[in-house]
Image (cartoon, helix red, strand yellow):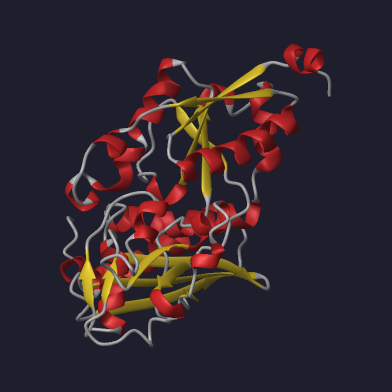
Length: 318
């Protein structure tokens, strides 16, 4: 397409964090939406509180610190669309905004990136494993209580650089981020969900816009509808409904994985004591492939877990 033709297309201003992963994810999503709607994407980099502050995310209000500035930009009208990692997005809705599209999900599993090609089972006793996630830490401790967990922050490259010859024997990262960055070579094991369930929404992106732009004849509405992936939306709706009912933050030691198996939506859940000494697991299904049924599935499993003491186990604020 000629430059002149591109210049004539309406501009779609897309808000993003400035990390390499965020820029990669946003670029892919923005191009898909723009192509579907005949728009010209323009990335707007926004510095979030999570990019500025240091220390454990669990002490900074959870990973929601990455979303606040992007949402403020949407409400102020300085961007038309924001692209979030769905696992970083708080479950509470924001008046005036809507998650209008959830593209097809990347691999939701967690990945071990270890020295010498080792797997979780092969790491020697006392090996130092880095993660900034209480959910990952608890499940690693449950599987391998003889390992040392080290709390870490930083982007993907910074974390990988700490693996030997750095000060760590391994780190645990989202497989989706490594794949999007072309760093699959660093993965020594894709951890089976039976051992480590991912965070709610892990591997999925949330495309959020102002509510008036998500419905009716708004040009953006049709473009977002075109990139929305129904099966992914059902799965993450169930996962996030569970988190909502548990009243747990994004950084809580809660793992869950929804997916379509045949005609059923299946949801697996784990709630962990942060020290990994005890895990509480549940699974459920629904044959109804609707958003309401997905939400109901997540809520039902959360109710069962709460009745059995999950709030006390995971030290949730209820």
